[in-house]
Length: 239
Image 1 (tube, rainbow, N blue to C red):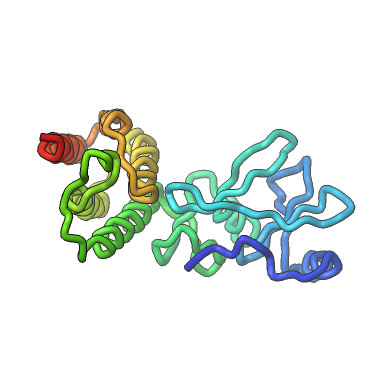
Image 2: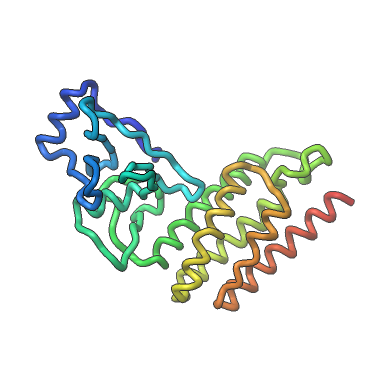
């Protein structure tokens, strides 16, 4: 499912009608501005005489975000805005996507959950992306990159990324990670998302990404194994 970046309205009067009939709710957590959100994650601004449809965007993790002026620029998760207005706020929970797709910000796909559940969902999305890469390259006879393509993901690299992600998802489902590890896990998953989304690879960036120092020894070992494997692949390709 892809996120609808534009609200299904054809005129400013229709925008006003949707607000007045309750299709949109005012974002109550933003006191200094008039922003409204629908159960489908559509957003409009009534901060000026002419209503404006806002255009959220997808970030590397697959989640949908929007920048609002409150009065300074601040980024918000659209899923969180939907849940807060139509379910109620939650201080200790994060938005969880029932179908595992963070692009689906419809209210019926959202619930408040734990950071652990969110991490599992993010990993599932990464697994799907990695498998899609493998399927697209399945017919290629070239298993490695040529010197001019040294920053391109190769089939060997994708295979090990996919294997790691599958093991990583299993680890998340079987272990309750500490809060400190969950905090470190988010940028790590975002970094892997960027690699798979851009179909590009930089060893320096990957090395920095693989040094989060998790408290969970099993997760640390898995990341170290992945890094060492990718290093061996790169060395073999360049030899």
